[in-house]
Image 1 (tube, rainbow, N blue to C red):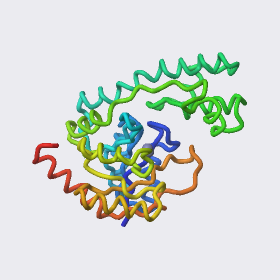
Image 2: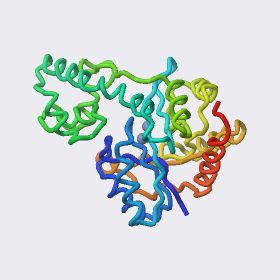
Image 3: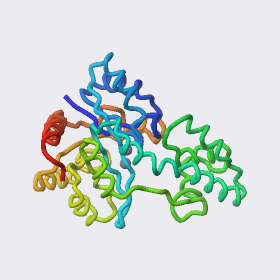
Image 4: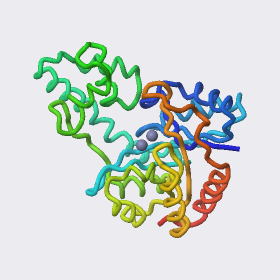
Length: 280
Ligand SMILES: [Zn+2]
Ligand SMILES: [Zn+2]
């Protein structure tokens, strides 16, 4: 029995709706999944509703982009109270800054002779709550300014290129604290991608409760390293595919990554404990 605790939907930059994801997960034989969209819990309700018709348990989740002086970090949160107004306001903060950011990037690109309007970007995003560079890349590609989305990124959108505008982000410490305050469990996403190894220690000091040990980015020895680290530090272990549907280069399907059901059981019992004990 396998699970997948890291899946994106159309609520952020995935190509499948939450209901489609639940159906696909069942077909793939997954017993538990988490909808963990970028900086929004907007897809969770639909997935929870869909689980009634399928043999899949849905864990409410989120993947928050947070900043630390040592680098950018993605922090997963599970089982937060989604109705918590402080938590939703926290997620909303960087999102509110996205409109002006897209507008500024379009202005810069237009200055380079690439006619792109913010409305076109929002249209491509199709109502997704998190609108960002992938959507802008798609517009650049569709208008013939780049041969594919990758080239659009490399030439115009990545850090250090003329179209890049820095994003407003919440700090890692605030993010971890906010997940806990809303009753959730905090997990460091794909830790193998952290640029500075010292960052992991800082995040553990800030109270991160778990490590995403299993993911497509980790080679077998990386999985073993993080698994041992989690065991030695008393951290929870999770795993997820970071599935985005067809929007990114699709090199795997739901269910390809084998994440043991035991991870879910451990996470679930930690969740029950944290409701009794005060958080770090
Ligand atoms: Zn991520
Ligand atoms: Zn992700």
